[in-house]
Image (cartoon, rainbow, N blue to C red; front, side, top):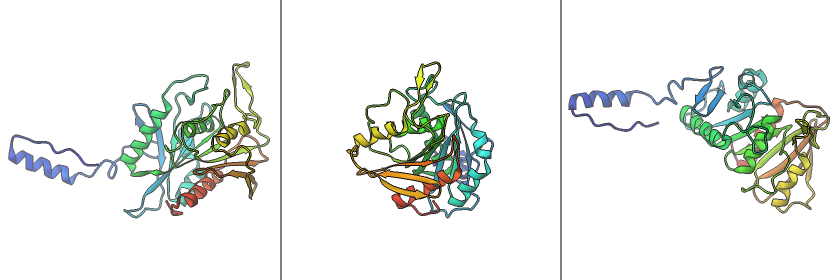
Length: 286
């Protein structure tokens, strides 16, 4: 990060000051002031970051997987998760755990809206780029449960904000959007057929005040918008995942089901990053 040149009335002082400025490294390269279990604090919120152990080449772009916790979750718990750390180290990417306000996310149909999340995530992406040199084009947003809801809505608002999206056990809420004002995302969704917390068909909450949306109907929003409502998906078995994939002109819409309940595995996020990397032409280590 370059610093603006400042003019001083005394030539000698100017020489000393300019020399000091040139010698001092940028914050992103020397001391970002946060990392690990020390939060990176912005005016709009906090995030935590785990950087990959293996050093990257100076000219290699640094990608990042951003993760959104479930309802009343704590991002610091995700940054402590060894499987997430190992995933980031193996892929050579940063793992970023983002904190919701009071453990919640403010998507349009949420019970409470405590923050402009779109503006907040723009701030996070700018800060990641400035402090750690993260390439904003090489990012994947993932979220579990309530974090999955937020992931769907961010993809709907602007699919280009992140390189791809990997929501787990969370889709739109009722009323579902009629359409999304953006191109189809690269979206890789994983859900358990035995999930009772966020069932595939959705469920009522708050004594009938709010309703989680149906996952298949959430996909229909994108399929209709992409002219794929009557198109049969391509199917694929990947381990314990049974996947269906629709291919818009741009982006991808993939729904993978497993026979488990309300759960998350780092391997599902890793798979999404790998698939996204192949589709985008990224190298396997960035």
